[in-house]
Image (tube, rainbow, N blue to C red; front, side, top):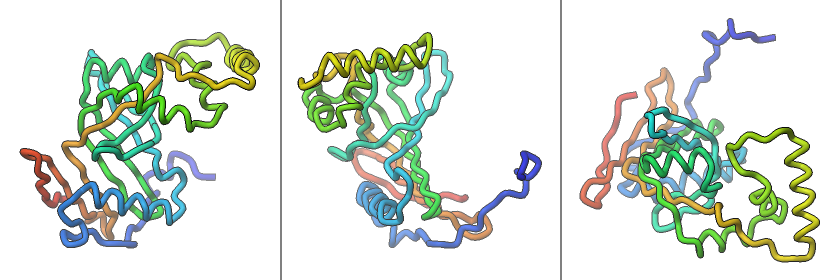
Length: 215
């Protein structure tokens, strides 16, 4: 059985692919779409799972996994409770970071930008296509708040399920989407000897400027 003593010897050799300037192209959103499609085809587990990093009013960073639910107007869209810790952080500081990691492809994508709430109409459109259980779950959970027990949540869920039986479930007023407008997008491809390929796109005067970073 492996223990933490084995951590120093845990490593993977990355040799699956190469990221060159010619394959990167000049449009980071097009490259993201290509890599995302390849992650789906490869069978990565939840390829749209991404780390979302925020910073609170005291400068304390926080990170969690959320799901990408749209790439609209060249912005990365996700949904959450507007009373959650992440939403409170974004209210204080709109600067956020995203990270996708696809181990089968030996790739990751790092994104920096600003997050803003999307329109209520856009949020309602997405809420309407969510599974019914997820819709009820959005009403059940006051995300990030303390609850007395698991049973409390399950009882509330059951009560709401019965209340809305045979009815359309409305979107909660405290729930909706955010759209992250990127200012930096870095593509990372694992390589042998830890000499990884890192191609960075930075937005300057509405144009994307590409550069290569040392690993």
